[in-house]
Length: 388
Picture (tube, rainbow, N blue to C red):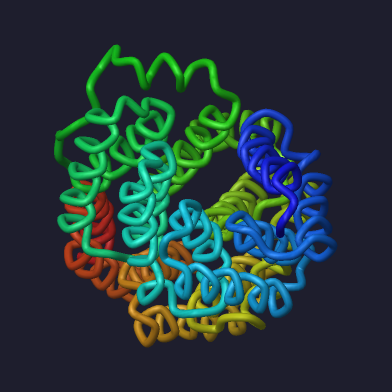
C-alpha cells in the first residue's frame, strides 16, 4: 500500500473497530469489510493482517468457522513473517480467539501471552493488558489448575496496575472474584478501586460481570439467585460481530441454567432457549470435538433429563464425563459428574448419586476448586445420611 492517506485510514479504522466493540458492536462489520476492501484495492500495509483477523472472526460469528480460520491463520502467518509490525500483538490476540474454536484450547491459550509480549515490545500497553485479560479468561475455561491461574492473574493485575489500564483490570477483578469463590480463598480484588468504578459504568463490563455471576450462582446451586441473574443477563444481552471463545462458555452455562430453571418452573420458553444453546454447541463440535464435545453431551443429557428420557440421559452423562476426561478438561469432568449425581438423586438412586458426587468432589479438588469441593461435600454428607 503506497498511498499514505490509505495507510492512515487503515489505522483509524482499526482504532474505530476497537471503540465500536465497547460502545456499538453492531457497526463492526462496516469497519471490518472496509479494511479488507482497502487492502484488496490498494495492497498490503502493516494493518492488513488485523483486517484479515477481524474478517475471519466475523465469518466465525456467521457460523463459517472453517473459512474464518483460514483468514486468521493467514493473519498470524503475516505477522510471524513481519514481527516488526506494531499491530502483531493485537493480530495474534484476535486470531487466537478463533483458533480456540478449532484447535485444542489448552495448546493455543499461551498465544495470548505471546500477544502480550509483542504488544509490550511495540509500546502498546493497552493491547498488552487486554491480551493478558484474554489469557486469564480462556485459561480458566481450558481447565488450567486454579493455583497456576491465580499466579497468572496476579501477574496480570500487577501489569495492569503498573500501566494504569483500569478497563482491563475491571474485567480481571471479575475473574478473580469467581476464582476466589471456587478456591475458597481471598487474594487480590481491591475494594473501592478505580476498576470497580469502571465496572459500574461500562456496559461491556456489566455484561461480563453478569456472565460470571450466572456461572458462580449456577455452580454453587443458588437457584433463586441464578434465575435473578439470568433475567438481568437477558436484559443486557449484547449483539456483536467478534467471535470470542468466552462466548461459547457463556452459551454452555446459559444452556445448563435454562434446563435447570425449566425443571423447576415447567415454563416451556426456558426449555426452548436451552435447546437453542444446545444446538449452538453442537454446531461448534463440527469445528472442534476436543473443545466442545463434552459440553454438547452434557447439555444433551440435561435436555433428555427434562424430557424424561432417563435411559438416554444416563448414557449421555457418561459420554460427557468420558469426553471431558479424554480432552483434559478436569473442570468439565467435575461438572458432568456433579450434574449426573443430581440426576440420580432425582431418580431416587441415592447410592449411585453419591458415587458421582464423590467423583465430582475429587475432580474439583484436582482442579483446585477447594471452595466448591467443600460445599459439595456437604451435599455428599446429606445424601449419605439417607443411604445409611
